[in-house]
Length: 351
Ligand code: ADP
Image 1: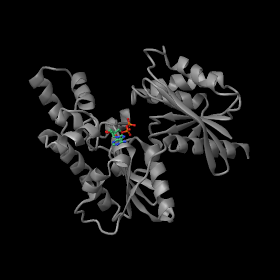
Image 2: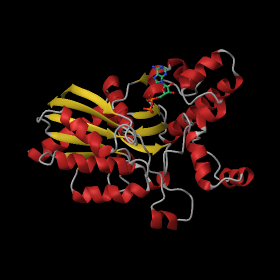
Image 3: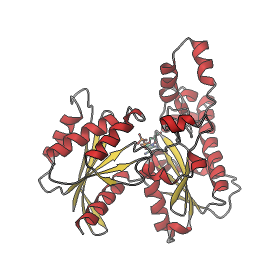
């Protein structure tokens, strides 16, 4: 089965074309249409460019959708109802769901006679227990507005957790795994017996670990304090926390770990401090997740930093009290996971 995977970001669409036969996947083509909004007018034109590159043999399309709210606990075949639900959750992910919806509607129009499947970043976290996803704020905000932990990067965490089980030659239902996705965005997930039981990103991707330019956890009282001191509005503060904080905010060098590591080797004090804060937060979460799962068999690192900075990975687990844990570095492959889900859903439907 030929499956096209579309991964829409705010200014780009990445695509991969797979040929899947039973459990074997082959990549036939891959690429990206970038600078949407500049060189390319919008996501619809980008989809047109991609579809022109494809021959007529695509049998299904898998779409990455960031926010499926609390409605989708797994990947689904797309129909008008599903599209409506994704639209509904746009208010929870205003930067992510709208471009995906444009991609979705245009590709459904152009490739109208084949099935389309939605794979949600949030779906993996629908197994979190209520006490892990609920914030301790007045309960009516959850009831009225669905304010809760959703979690993101779910497809990546799900993929590396299943790869870890395969590498360890054990059933995932027998393992306690902590997965660390460390890219520009960073998140960490506790996977107990194959199910996510907690994760660091929250209502939005801002919570949790220190990231390239996002703060991660902080005392919310800092927000009005800074607004008053700096005479800025709330949108500006949120912008600061998303784009000017994290590794960039502390180091004042870059959001790119490579630059910071380079400078820290030259004894730059702020570069060293940024890395210390970054690694400390990861170590703290690993301890917390080992505690809630009552132990841990393996810690997995993935994402640009996790896959390429073994020295940093080593520092996270140096002098850890956790004994007999396996440490694995596994390259993530969200597109492959999306292709597999799409294949599985279409196969089941055809049977
Ligand atoms: P995104 O989250 O945008 O997909 P990545 O997963 O590529 O980004 O992660 C970006 C981070 O990974 C940067 O901090 C970068 O320094 C680091 N990184 C990416 N590739 C490498 C590499 N080859 N060597 C060292 N660090 C890398």
